[in-house]
Image (cartoon, one colour):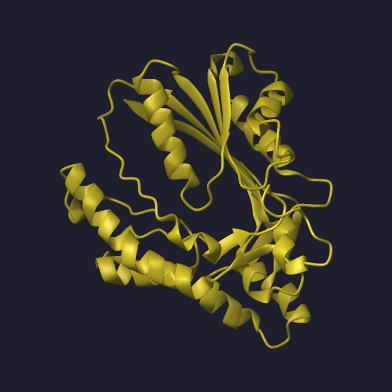
Length: 275
């Protein structure tokens, strides 16, 4: 059906280490931060760098490996677009010098964005709409963080990834499991800046990202293990059939707990959060 042919990434030059954060929040030692979230350093976009700039650089690295005229669709996943409109994917098409007779769209998702992108790409390939899809996942979340928000500043960073997804009839038709529960929308939210609430200079908290970490932790522990079992069953696989488990890299605490619940051996479970 399809395959992931290439992946390239780009990160801003500026790094924020745990030692840097300790200077601002003396009560948090570098060791405490690392033990809790599993991160030693994160990358931060400059004031001039937007999500589009990061996406262009990641995509240009990928396009060096292929004929860019083969690209026939752009999927751009971001929650920090340059503009409310137009679509960032359309601007990316122009910046990369891609053909004008291709499809391009943005979609707004966070943690689940890459998996959703794969599922959309599968649908485009299955219906004959596209054969060579550029999937870009890029964020500049640090632009939505308050300087005083020590919890979120330990977790969030900026970066971009460009993935080439291509039609491949030798691959099996892998089935996806998707889910939606909008009841907890206010556990991870930027309240101001959309159509409901305009940017308010007197409401810094509302202009920035808010996350209820405890509720999100509970949600992931309750939902993710069940989804793993469901997708294995849907694809006629057992837990031991899988060589490697790659979950969304939220933080080390969540990942360790998910691994324990699912009883996955450490050597089969991917954790790559340090940098």
